Length: 234
Image 1 (cartoon, rainbow, N blue to C red):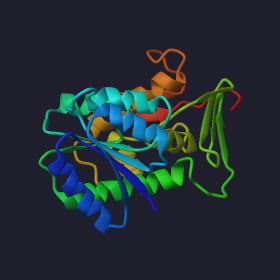
Image 2 (image 1 turned 90 degrees about the vertical axis):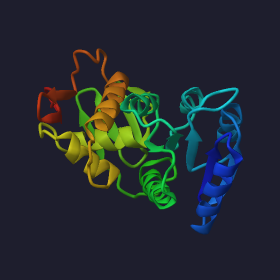
Image 3 (image 1 turned 60 degrees about the horizontal axis):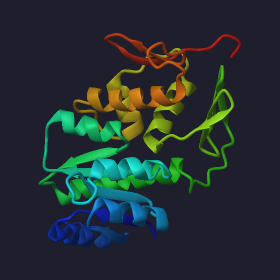
């Protein structure tokens, strides 16, 4: 059974989310602040986290940063704010998705299903038998073990970052628009996906490029999208 951590300082919201998740067959854990969320994530086998941004003791953004130090579990952020800058901030620091309060419970459940399905396929619990390894210069992606190496050093990626990198490495030289990447990776129709994809690509570049401002691997084709630059000898 998949276990989901719900973190929000408003008990009524946690109660409501818990009811819907349990109706769908998920097991739940609760946390009332960011510190409790970090402790719960570190001490339990969790497949997804739903976390509010504004909380006492440790806010959701800082809690997520601490969780990302030891876990790539999908994180869906909740916030009463709807401005793009707040969404970008959450995605920049490691969130996989973002839902604005008040939210439609069925939409939240759909996003939970999507993230858990992707994590099961791409995360540490995957039991895929495909042993395909993708290589491009000093960049290597092991699709079976879900590991990425840059010049021999293992790099930790979130499931979304891994999915984007895999898509681009499977199609070297092919330009993918932000909408095409979103539809392929998130598995849903792209609506104003540019910012979401841009944040994940920027975060990915910071991890795999020696100098993100002069990238070797992921290139921007202005006005069109992104592509994986094929390295000499690959």
